[in-house]
Amino acid sequence: MARKRLVIKIGSSSLTTKDGQLSIDNINHYTRMIAELKRCDHDIILISSGAVAAGFTKLGYPARPVTVSGKQAAAAVGQNLLMQAYADCFSKEQLVAAQLLLTRHDFVEEEQYRNAFNTLDELLRRHVIPIINENDSIAVDELTFGDNDMLSALVSGFVHADQLIILTDIDGIYDANPMEKPDATKYKHLTGVSDKLMTSASGSSTKVGTGGMKSKLEAARTAHMMGIPVFIGTAVEEHSLVQIIKGHGNGTYLYPHTLKMMKNKQQWLAFHSLSSGKIIIDNGAEKAVLKRGKSLLPVGIKEVEGHFSAGAVVDVFNENGRLIGRGKINYDAGDLLDLLSCTDNTDAKHREAIHRNQWFSIL
Image (cartoon, rainbow, N blue to C red; front, side, top):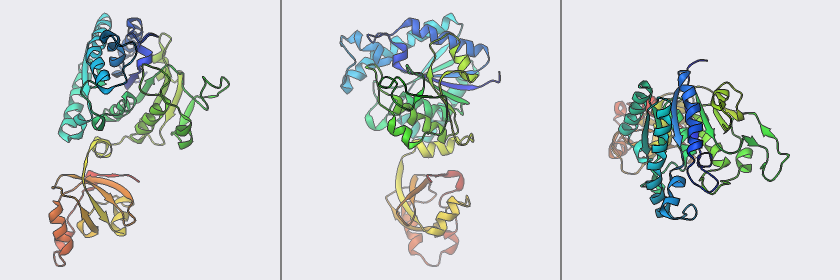
């Protein structure tokens, strides 16, 4: 079996008992199978939910808390319990686990984004199992990944994974809710994630999880944008993970339309960078950047909005007001405005405003 880099996401419902307690038996089950993959020389990155589920009963909550402060307090207690359980179980397999707690802010700054990649890469080279979770105890809404499904998709692209495996308590994607319609048909293989499929997907069906099939399909869509194939299903039986990467898993395989990997620079621009301004370009410039892969020149810029400095990320719109991409600008906003109002500085107007290597097309 060829060596693969795999991102495995395990949901809360797969790690807890029916009453919401962290299940050491379940963690043992998954760590044994991950160890089996490691013995086959695969690189593994684990995205693990379960911190809130592990912690809320320790705080005396009768059920998963619904307030932000309650969830964050439960995560603060539960993350320690979760990691200790993983460390103990992996130790039995002679493997070392490392914890990475992330928020969206860790990816917003490009330098931190690169540092996170370097840390993960070094851990994998040292044969350590990185265990990643969102830092739920301090995250705020505007700086969250949404849920660990989306986090797993973004990480899979970030590390150029060969496959993203999303494990849940439902054995794949169906054409209807199998809990409501027992005769629903399961999809074994899908190419892309259609709007119709997204519309039919439901939210979370458990009290311990935050996602649902819709969030998993959204994550698959995001992974597909970066060229990553996805599996969504269960891994209840022993050796399930090996079977999944062999193509015999109990779930649904979702393939992107292209397996071309998106470069990390484009990933950062597309999913993590924050826009500092807006520029509107003419039809000729639009064709140059979208159709011919050219850099954007100041001569093609019609309007500038916002106050930004050279090196900032800006959103780029066409003459019809449609967002067509974003990129890292080489000019201050004031300098661009001066260029637009100047009629004789033709040389400057043909210097790159956004280099094609610093550009991401939305369309």
